[in-house]
Image (cartoon, rainbow, N blue to C red; front, side, top):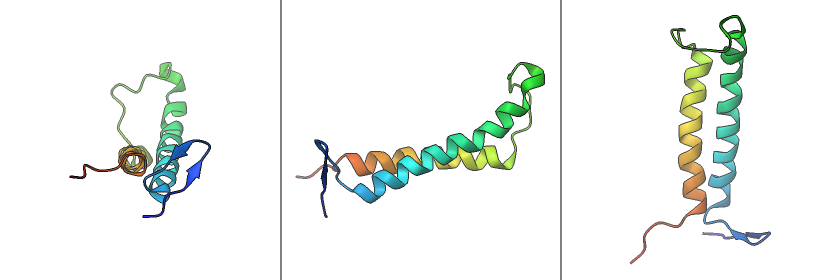
Length: 78
C-alpha cells in the first residue's frame, strides 16, 4: 500500500483516513438541523422523533470513525 508522510504522520491508508474524516464531519453536520430545531425545548432532544437526516448522520459518524481508524492504524501482522 502506498504510504505518504505528511508533517510527521505516516498514514497506513490515506484515502480511508480522509474519507473517514469527511464522513464524520458530514455526520455531525447532519445532526445540526434537528438540534437547532429543538430551540423551543432548550435544545433537549429527549422524546423527539429521530428524523432521517439524523439517522444518516449517525451512520456516517460510525462508519467514518471506523474508516479513520483503519486509515491510521495498521492491522495485526505476524
